[in-house]
Image: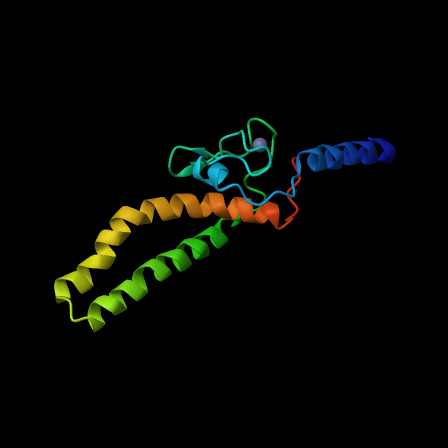
Length: 138
Ligand SMILES: [Zn+2]
């Protein structure tokens, strides 16, 4: 393919990408509904554990590089720590029964663990899109 045509293709991709790009803040409704950060229409996830490779509506790449979602793990770990450590310290300091001090993190993780894991990935994708990370649609 001649270089001019490559440049043309590249420009049309950039134009198409900028047409979708928004300066609006993250839509928490889009995060809650697990929608694409660019068009907010296409679904990001296929079930609880798998993520579609691309948006079915705008072709946005949900897996721009290998290991992309490692940051989501750290985000989930941070939120889990914030929701676990202070209440456990409070329970211990207030003299609660040891069963509560030990049981709280397990019960909390059973309830919130899957939700935090699921939404951390989607929030990470939205944060990356808003931060302007280079994720071309092709
Ligand atoms: Zn999309």
